[in-house]
Image (cartoon, rainbow, N blue to C red; front, top):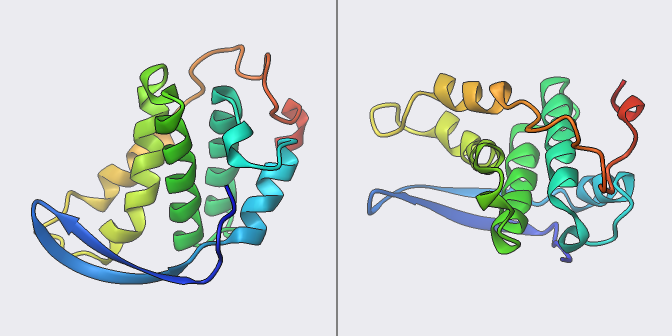
Length: 149
């Protein structure tokens, strides 16, 4: 999936109300690097375990400041869409939820608190996600475990 890095406007609607409009630019070059790290050219080529491992890399880069809030959110959204399209979300709903929460984080931080759930809960979901199985790297396009050290 070719991603455009031009400025896109997105209006956030929840509970039938418009809350805000965000102008965000998809981080195409950074996303391409993540895909390259996993040995794929397009996100549609990712398997479920690679998406999980990529989430761990994204989360760590976000925590370390290598990805800003919107970059993290937009890439999480992209991976969540791939999961849903391939029905990987049925096999790993916790990861699907963590990716969805990653996408929502930029909206939650900027929202009126009385209308949105607690940002701490969103962060907790993102930070608490653990690998679903010990075999996450088997049959995967993910880089070797020492890649993340």
